[in-house]
Length: 598
Ligand SMILES: Nc1ncnc2c1ncn2[C@@H]1O[C@H](COP(=O)(O)OP(=O)(O)OP(=O)(O)O)[C@@H](O)[C@H]1O
Ligand SMILES: [Mg+2]
Image (tube, rainbow, N blue to C red; front, side, top):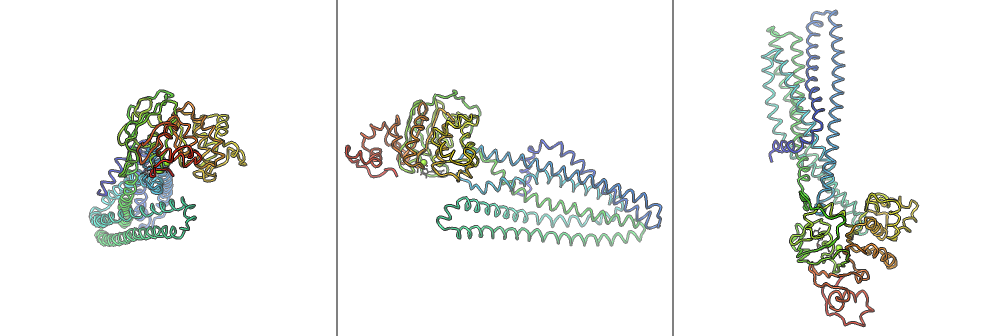
């Protein structure tokens, strides 16, 4: 994409976001027009000073001129304050809106996005690159207009002072532009590289520090430091290259400026001796000219920084163009509230994006309302994947999943999830207090309900043992708690949600045998009357289920009740006997070798 085209694209995309600020932008435009006029007045006053005071050596004319200078200085100061503050106010508020919008957009994306993307990269876009949009859409526009306005006003005054001299002066400007343009492209490429490099430093640091436990346990600190240093060095090189290009630009521009001024000075002295211009006029002309180069140079560097910013804005556009892979239908079907909770899967096949083999193949089963179905199978069989489809984190590649006869694709995912309580395999907690984490299940819950849920999940005792009780902070991702404590909080969170559908992914993995036994009663209480899908290696919970499904490599190989499956004497029976060796005596040893669970 050509740089100009990408700046245009950035505008097309983000100009509407500046709409709330248009009123204030008009005000800053007024300042943009008035400021150069006042500046011009100051310089013209300088001509009066030379021609009326200095040349005739007339002190009496000095006082009004001096008063004029003071007045103009005051006005310039007030205007400067107003335009700076207004500019920052508009910019910061715009930035705040953009940041929040991008963040909100990220939360609309399907979980598949976060599985694929590196978090650090997304973060650096959210914090760094968003600012670039502001610098294109607002600061950029105001800067360009302010500089253009100065150029117009000063050029008009130049022609007013001496036409021939003005024509000579304007020959130097195109030369300047040709140089500026040749540099613009290279600076864009260099600054894109710098941004990418800084982004990857954050990525490496985030991945590395986020996995501190793993890295220390395996003694990989040195390797990690080297990996980080390599990225950091890359950033140094990119920054140096960008600075080299940028720094070469400035002295070249200065040289052109000096040559231009010397040429014009020559012509000016000739005009002065011919009597076409006064000394004050010539001096004022030179001051205007010097003033003119600054906005021209400003335009040049604005153009280059615009291209740099456009590169950063492209990274934001790329994020904003990510669509949720599970779209919300335009007219979602309404679920009865509460839904009965009859779940049906028909010939569901699912392949993860960017994966070649299906994680689930032709899965068909029904969970009648209020019944419990257990899913059993080896690690990697597709059990968690099945839950992800039920939560509509992904849509099936083929086949349909229905709730109360309604295709999940016809439902608003938020509405669907509001009827589901879930305990995920990887226990996730937010940084906050224990109470906040449990209440996340149902933000409107009362304190009594909170206590009841914690009691039922067998969490109340360990919570109150903390000095700060329910107000204990759990740390980032709950790191300050043990695995079993986290899991019980997750169960309390599911309990308090009180939803008709319950999805449990290994709810007892991190618990010791004793705690597991204690938690079974509340879990059973949680499951009664709710449509439940439970994934478990703990066959105690599984045996009680109304229906058991055995998954093998993404396919259902056995279904039935516990007794039926034991009688089948296949995978499930094998698994059961592994867990309960004492039962072996009464049954024959199954002849199955492959597919047995972990
Ligand atoms: N986000 C993902 N992208 C691509 N493939 C995935 C993703 N998540 C899981 N898989 C693959 O899908 C298959 C099923 O994974 P799943 O997590 O459903 O297994 P599981 O039965 O829950 O195993 P476990 O008992 O170990 O939790 C695995 O082969 C896994 O590699
Ligand atoms: Mg799993």
